[in-house]
Amino acid sequence: MEIKKGNKVIITGKNICFVAGILSLVAGIYWLVRALFYDDTNLIAMLSSMCIALYLITYAGRRS
Image 1 (cartoon, rainbow, N blue to C red):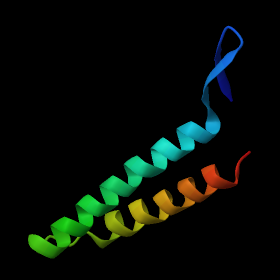
Image 2: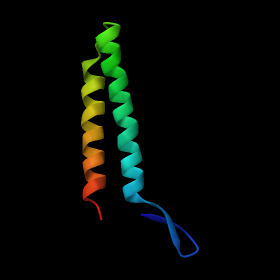
Image 3: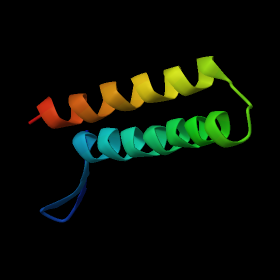
Image 4: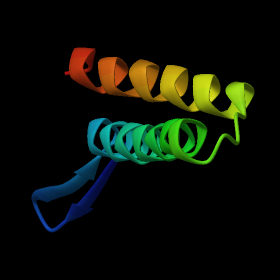
């Protein structure tokens, strides 16, 4: 998937996967901080966010 403006490629699927992975990583870190400092452990949200972030970032890195 590419979004083009004229002959220039502005956004690719790799960029979208990388940004989604970073946002998911931020959400996972948020849940980790809540678990450490506020004793509000939501293990499913923390693990799923971290796993999805890892998958999306590695998928964006492999994609050419």
